[in-house]
Structure formats: structure tokens, C-alpha cells
Image (cartoon, rainbow, N blue to C red; front, side, top):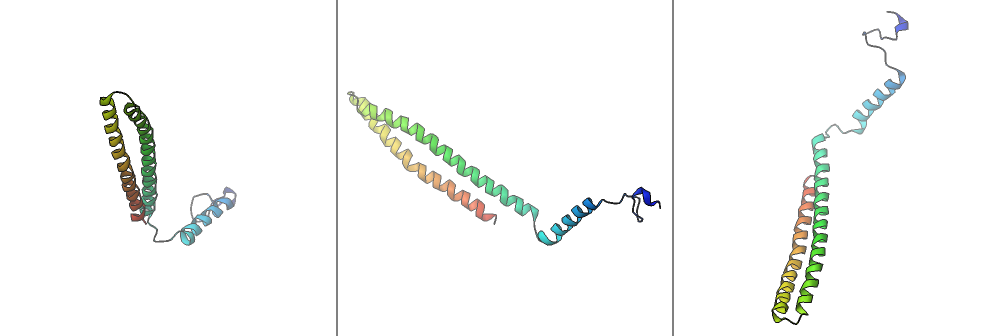
Length: 127
């Protein structure tokens, strides 16, 4: 075989460059020494996806609570204005509105807590 053609003696493939040989050695070292032989790629991927899903759930709860805060602030102001009016019917409607707002406000932490607990369960079940 002609030595000027930069081919190996065992095949018709071109010989690899020293740089490519170093890359191949690094990949082989990584596969043998760094990566564990029992690594399950799907398990690792599932953990990342589960963590991302849990983080998104918490962001959604945060957005939901912030939007409720904005709506309830306006509703509370309107109900207080109704209570302060001179009209007894409007005062009664304002009082009922404040009671309804109070019920919503007590249910929001329960909802947020349930979502947070679910998010934690999702992340811990993929460990």
C-alpha cells in the first residue's frame, strides 16, 4: 500500500488525524470512566421533565394568585364603596360581596397548597 495516501494498512478508510484520535480517546474515557454503566437515559430525562413540570405548576399558581389579588382588590374596593353608600340595598349587596370575597380568599391558600404539594410529589417520585 502506498504510504503517501494516508491510509491504514487494515482497511481502505483514511487514517485518523491525531486530533480526531484524541477526541475518540476522550469519548471512550468518558463512556468507560465517567458515565456509569447502569445509567438509564430515560430515567434521567424523566427527572428533568418532571422537575420542569413542577416548576411550571408553581409558576402557574403564582400567576393565578397574582391575578386573583388584582381582581379581589378591585372587588373589595367596589364592595366597600357600596357599603359606604346611603342606599340600604347597596349596603346590603356590598356586605354580601365582602363575605363572598372573604370565602374566595380563604380558599386560595388551600388551592395553592394543594398544587404545591402535588408539585413536590412529582419531583420526589422521579428520584
